[in-house]
Length: 292
Image (cartoon, rainbow, N blue to C red):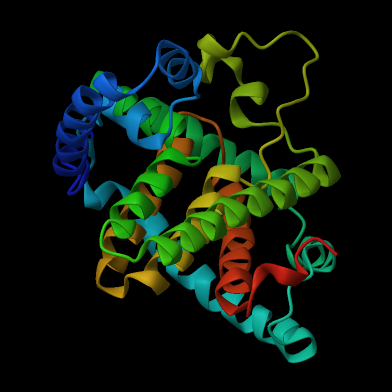
């Protein structure tokens, strides 16, 4: 049975934000017009509200995610060495188009069929150990792990920053997550590796895989890429919290294997992408050259 752990930050942060939201709501109601209230009601909920309305369950024990956490650390060293080559040529200039093309060429092809089949067997064995609590934890991490968690962490950091600096960091994180997503999608289209639950629909009956279905493609993991990019940026802005960020990233990627969204090599490749993206944004002098 998988042991579970309490998340360090969410309940305290969510409770504080909920209290602030309640106070703000009371004051705001008396000062806004009906039209303004209607517009606010239609606004897409942000990460803070989404997690407040869906607070985290107990998550996986450190022992469960330790192996993947170790692999993520090793991949960061690989990414840093690779990024040094980009930096030697481009310095701190932003050129998202050229960087995307470069990253796509740095990520190795997925393992051969026999190796991926062996990884699928690992996922199948892990699926046999699932518990109701584990499924609940994995589902929450799957839903919020692409962006909400990292945006809430960034919001937490901004509480103690000057407004202009906080806004700049919010924009950088958003751009980094977007670029990580774009690169993983290019690689997924190139290699077209079906997700484990596509190869074995019994792993996720809720996905309703049809006969002959090929996608979604799982190499590399988008969750892993976004997590790695966010960890690099957030850790650079708040080094004293780096351990918490890395621990959350390990939780997220473990959940993707636990619920058969990915095999381990998908996670490794996604982490490499995210680490490179994180280094790219952390190194950039300014976003002025983005999107060339």
